[in-house]
Length: 394
Image (cartoon, rainbow, N blue to C red; front, side, top):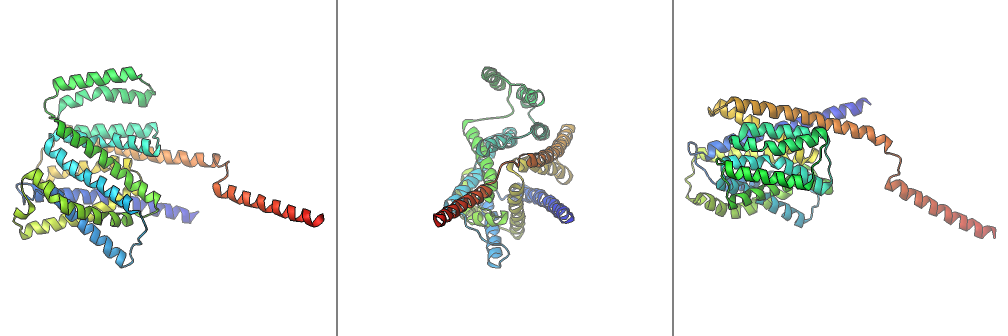
């Protein structure tokens, strides 16, 4: 009993460590990249190629780990790795194009919409259901992060219509007919077209944003499903996908960056300070990639999206402390609401686990497949013995 409790305690500590590593490395890499890419810093505007450098160092760390025996290599079909790398690289490129073609407000909204998209995709792909408490906490996080990051007031007012519908469904289990849902959508689109001016949306930008949302959500869900499907660890999976991503990004990344910035990386004048900043960004990316695979493998893509917004809160806070960014009461209220939502989400997920644990003993009336197989083998063996005894007696 004491051994089980100690193992559970150790597991919880390592879970906290995984989240801490992800938040710390993610915030660190954002700060390093801000210094590296900003015009007041080193003006290194080649984001896609930089991501290729990140995965190249991650792949090198994985190869060294495998060569020294620190990690074991398990078989994953090549087509699965190629498919995953294609989705992941599409996510990176689409995010960069979305930021270039859309306004900052629409870009923030598209990133925020990944939480409900991941929830829906996990429900479609893995038939995963969420309790009312989890749905409510996700809503609180989305609203909180939206208040602190989206500056368009008309968008926030317009979003009240679907939010009220969703909250009535969550809190009072109220359902709406297809006709009502369609009419609400028409009203939202009509009012949005006539009133929203700050968030600029164009056809190319909208397509890039939708592609980024879908591919990022699918990539994060695939991380968890591949680990479960092939019983492979997070670092082992990363060490297999990183070389493919690094090679493809380093080949095609410079052309993507040329389309985005109008410059090739070969025209950039490197300095020792810029090289140091690039190496720092790559080192932080190794920890960021490892912790991302680790967190999604242990929890879920939804948990990674919800709790991952702690990085948004940290970035806003550090931007105010270090870079003297503006911090309004709206930002503070939104961040506080987002943190409250994350705490409620953690409690709701733990509550779901307790419910499942309590329900398990009552549902253990049916036999497992192994028990059924052993029973069949035993019956066949008994029948054979009876036939032999019958032959002897006759």
